[in-house]
Image 1: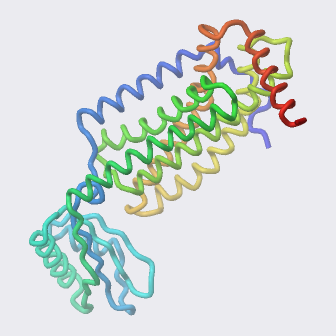
Image 2 (image 1 turned 180 degrees about the vertical axis):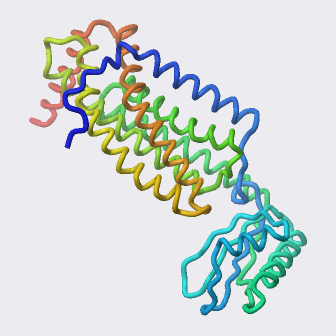
Image 3 (image 1 turned 60 degrees about the horizontal axis):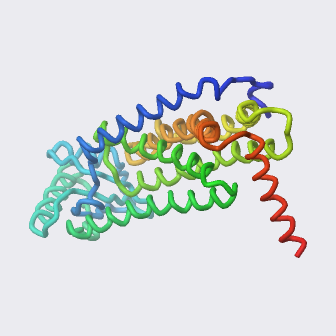
Length: 322
């Protein structure tokens, strides 16, 4: 299946337009993160977690629970739990036992008032201290940093050129920072589910970039008649349909969750929708043009570059024969 029949877009000729847009996205995102910071969830700041359940024959829904709590001035995070009876997890930023107990009593009173014919049960109450939340935030940052470093090493090994790896990771960094900056600017809650979305976006982004890079490497090894600019442009155009079809399949699911998944999954779906758009954009119009820009400015002529690639192939073939 091909969405585009023999496209011939001059990506390299217009490379500074998308690169400039990416610089603007990074600058605005980093500025928002520095000035406004993040609206962290209780996993990162500490707080109280309540699990409240209702009898199995009751028909309590998460929207009704949310309205009941909001009517009493409790703007809390609510998550529905699948099971034999209606069960809900409530999160609130109360980090000591006294505040947690007061919050639990207020929440139960609000639910009894909203549902007088059924009795809510407090299954358990957990209090996450500020120290634990800070440690979890530190571990999350390290998880993202180590993931990026792992991708950097893998791509450098895969293509035997650290510049290709650096171009891919810069594009990937652009996608993750862009989504994080959006959440910072809008004041949306940053929790572990959003961290999962960021790592998923990184995986999709580098996958699309590797497809383009792989076609570039193949053409550099087999086509000795065209210059580097032509080969990179043709590589991006030849993989364009595949890249767009891949992101469309993910976007259909993400958009469905965004509009019909409810408030619990809304932020996750928003991160996926925006991240996939940024990832596709950077894979097509940022990663490969960055490689081209470096190669033209610092890498020497195309002949020397191809010679290095050919030498690497011969070394591999020699190892296999041994």
